[in-house]
Length: 197
Ligand code: VGL
Ligand code: ZN
Image (cartoon, rainbow, N blue to C red; front, side, top):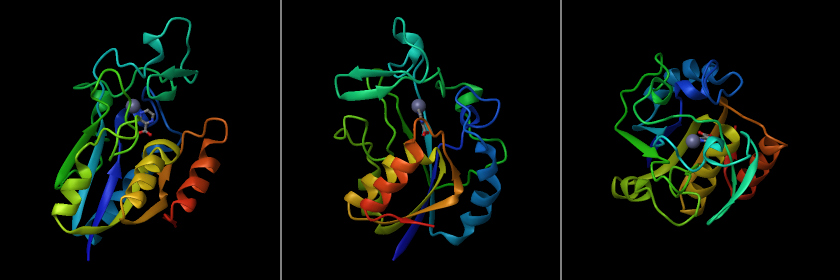
């Protein structure tokens, strides 16, 4: 069995001082670095938006960050501008070990957000990660990183739905937690058959 560690969005903008700081976001770096050598493969994901991305509140008249809107693919939280391609905010945390086999970027299409590392928020446009993992014979995934209730959550649920054996190490994740989103995410992951430890 081939086991991959998927490190989700450990980027400056999700750490204290960043544009969309997750409380304690930088605390995941040390435990993630310590885990890396236990896995056959390490994959990093990177939130990677063009300037003016449609998930940014600044692109919507009379909307503020963390308001909701309706996109053509369904409801969408509007975020502060974050992880703009090529900026310091989009870079990995400087202490994160980045000797990974693959970096998968997501959220680069202007009109659609992508929380999951597998599918964009329309839940059907693939990122290609499924094919990469399956063609390398990887069957088991452990997910860590930011944020527990958005990108880790949707990646874990999609992975379980695609037939991978999925574990989320909550000690190496931190949440945004908007209106109970952390509790809802934990319930959804458990319902999907994800092991939370
Ligand atoms: C994320 C909100 C917007 C995440 C990315 O990595 O969880 N959350 N973009
Ligand atoms: Zn984003």
